[in-house]
Structure formats: C-alpha cells, structure tokens
Image (spheres, one colour):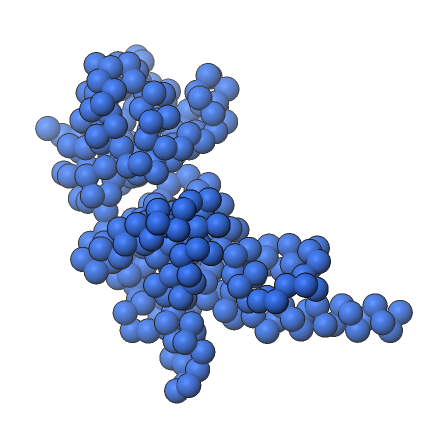
Length: 294
C-alpha cells in the first residue's frame, strides 16, 4: 500500500513540476483561463493513464499532449469570433524574475498582451499553434510538424504567415473586405466556377457543420482543405444570400423568409479560412442575422 502511495505521489509531483508551463501554453493557445485549465486537466488525465517511465523529455511530451488538446478545442469552436477572451491583465502571471525560465518570460513579455490575443484569434488553428509553440515557447518545427501532421517545411510556412499578421498587428479584415470575399465565394459556387472557388479559399480551410446539417446530407461534420471544400460547394448556394452573422459576414438560405441554414465565414488576408454551418432551428433562432447592405 505504501509503495502504491509513493508511486502515486511521484506521478503527481512529476506533473506538477510542469503545470505552470502547460497552463501558459494552453492559455496562449486558447485565450481563455477556464479553457486553459480544462486543457491542462485533460493533459493530466492522459498523463496519468500513460506509461511515461521511458520518456526522457517529459516537458516536451506534455507540451505535445496539451498542444493536441488545444488544437482539438480550437477546431471544434463553433466560431472563431466566440467570446473566449478574458481580462489578460488579471489572468497573466506577474513578470518573471531575472534568470527565470525563458519560456515563462516569453509568455509574460510586454508584447504578449491583449492586442496580440486579438490577432491570434484571427489565425486558423494550425497557424496559431505553429506560431505560439515556436515563437513564444521555442518548440522546434519538427516537433510541431508531428502535432499538426504536416512537414516541417509546411509548419515553418504556417508560423511565418502567422508571424506576418502578428507583426502587422492587424486582426481579420473588416466587414467590407470580408463581404467582397464572401460574395466572390457565393458567385463562384452558384456558377460552378471551381478554379475561382479555389482562389478565395485558404489551403487549410476548415468547414464545420452541426449535427442538423449533417443529418440533411451535408458532406460530414468537418471538411478540410481547399480542394475538398471547393468540390463540396461547387454548383451550390444558388439561393444563398449574404448576411452578417453575429458580427461575421456570412450567408443564409431562407426559403419563404425563414432561415433554414446559416453559414458564418472567417476571412483572413482575402481568403476564407473557416466556415461554420448551422441548420439547427434553435441555434439559428439565437443568431443575430442582419442583411448586408450594398
């Protein structure tokens, strides 16, 4: 019994040594204290069930696990404009003392503030993960590539693209810029112009549909990649009209004036990086749908 207690104590101690680091990573990934805590808790559960006796770099192993948990959370958010930001002034730890761990110093640097969080929130999940892990926590691209199931070169490009947005300090485009992109998407979809569809889609675009949309014959809960998304929408959207969906430019299908399907678009740098499809009547009833003016 004593041996089991000692083993359990050692397991807890090994994890607690890295808890603050894991929470810093999760918080910067998700922008939410409560979600960060949930991600760290899920990481603990996976760690407790795993055999890590032979793991030489436990911090690296745990960082990979918490990053995958955060990536899943980012991908399943109903919309990237979800109100997940909390007060960074109260949530972030105080600045590290001289000689403190460089990873902790990075996450607490003055440049990592509310403005950065807003820009991070405009990145797609893969860009966000690549930038946060590499630029803020110094994780090598070959390790990040494993998490994203990409090549190191592709992962480096994701981080570079994210870094350009962060340096410019610009979040996603304003409504006017979003509108032109969404209208171009809808026109190409209606007219079956496949190549034009590809032009307005980000290579890593992710389309997420709710269960009601899947039940009506949509291609699946998630569709990923420009080609797959273009094939899905090519020749469709005949009766879709552009609207503002909870602050995002989107589209809806409303036969007889009743919205039956709503699409919320996320547009970054002139391309569609995400589409959330909602067909559930109760959810649609709670959406703020505003007709787009010419």
